[in-house]
Image (tube, rainbow, N blue to C red):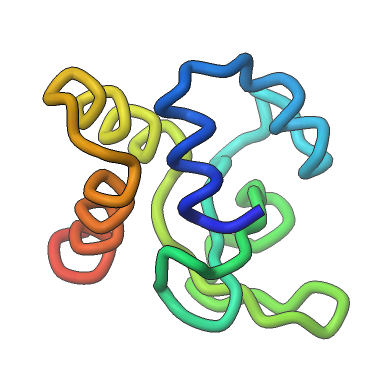
Length: 105
């Protein structure tokens, strides 16, 4: 799943349980965050990782793949909800979230 796929999924208000299962986490995983592979881009693959796995590191290596911290999942969900309320496209929402992660977080 790419970052844009995640934003599109959340914008469609799909149930989050299948998303959590696919990433091996649960809604009560402490410090659940979105990590991106390779670079902070909309087409980057994602991993949902808890703070217990990553120790809150900004860069995390799992099975030989380097992941870069983007934002906490709950913040991403809030930003997506705001974008949906504004009727922004998933691409615009994804760009806004990445912009926030890079420059404001």
